[in-house]
Image 1 (cartoon, rainbow, N blue to C red):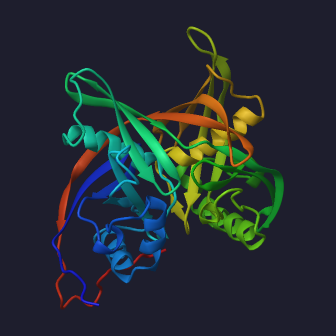
Image 2: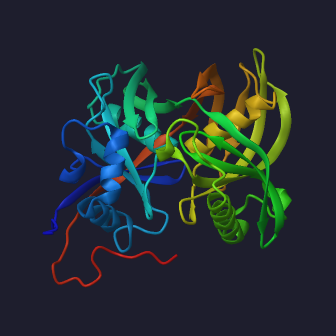
Length: 348
């Protein structure tokens, strides 16, 4: 195959510290007519062109082991503004809350989706796990924040024991656009803090590998969404407190280890959605309540239950997650045909 040498142009944003690299001119293999975004993800996974471009833009020296981004693709139909294939250092994911927040902010800030100087504009995005909405709030012509309404999220399993190098831990499994294993970080003798990131990466990998080997995370309606995508380590910051006007605020912190050892710098949008499903199922979070969800770097998402529904025959909630997005720059990458390190590498 003749690989393109570029230039490859990207627009880079971050959401709560987590990068999101937007690629508007995507590989031809994933932009053809007649496919859904879920089908395009399967094509991308098998495509040498798409995988090579992903590796080029994600890996070093153009990216790093925790880089994240997405290829823009046609939506499933005219009901959405755009489609996206999310990628990381190991491949293409089924969902990404922080990426959806970034895309909403970018679509409004760039003028792709017209928006008033003051108000809320819905940017509808087709992702591999379904159709989601980024509600972008503008004030004086600038993006203030974005509320991401996710696909229905549900509890998959409770109290699953997993043998690890730190002893046996017990996890819950929930779906928030992808499957997550969720457990209190103190059960592993650790904290959600920068100095514990390295052991949490190792533990997250162990938990994912053990659960996938056991086939513990089969999606009830779509096998393409099966398998543990990430491990969410949770920690309570403060006990629940009253909200002005009614309801309660839960104040928690989390660190999400996803794919093969990547650490989400944000509170993780799809991981937060899985957390919402678990808290709602336990009766700890009700309509009108808010989860203040912090990341390991101190960034915050505010999350709530937008509604209750049924998905694939199981009870589910519709999560809403609010965060902020900021542009960090634009890039124009090239490839020197003499470069023996193309498409790149990762040191993890």
